[in-house]
View 1 (cartoon, helix red, strand yellow):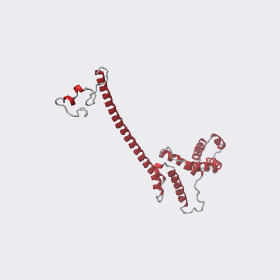
View 2: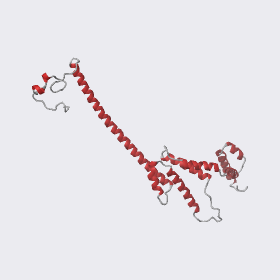
View 3: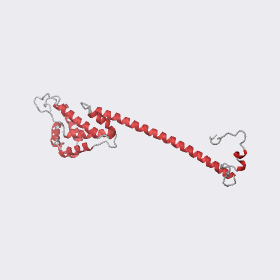
View 4: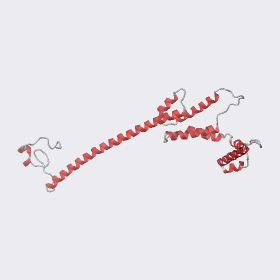
Length: 247
């Protein structure tokens, strides 16, 4: 807060009221009632931080169990990643990385290495929860040195997913075409059987409703021995196998 005679005091008061309003609108009504009488936004924030920044071992245990039980299952890759990433964000909020307290602050790379280690833990759990179709991604990423970033691993997984969907779509298309060809062949066979049955029925009707005649010499139906070509000779222009070739 500026001094009383500072010309920026009016601006500070206006901004302070805005921040207080944001805080009160962002918390539960019962929590807002307990801090609404603070005039200074920084004091309001310090009170909330002191009250709710305590670690919750029970909740940490629940999130850790959810992280290790989380698997892809029937989810697509993007849905599975969103669920996994949300759990890790909650864990990072409940158990943030420790900050260096050296004065002056030291120049070692311990913080960046700890951050990298936690990101690798997230990648390993993400890969471990993928379905068996992504085994190539799992084995490929885990042998890399260093392990790539989460975004790159996600892109690799999405590419494999698109390839798997393309293969399944192609197989479905081939299966449908094969069924269509088989159904067409079955339909043609059924049509030929129907035509044959119709012709036999027609012969049966023309014969006065009796069974079609059978030749005692050649054994064929449709004529008797008095009209058998094998006994009396074939007519002029007769071609052997004419009917059998469906001509």
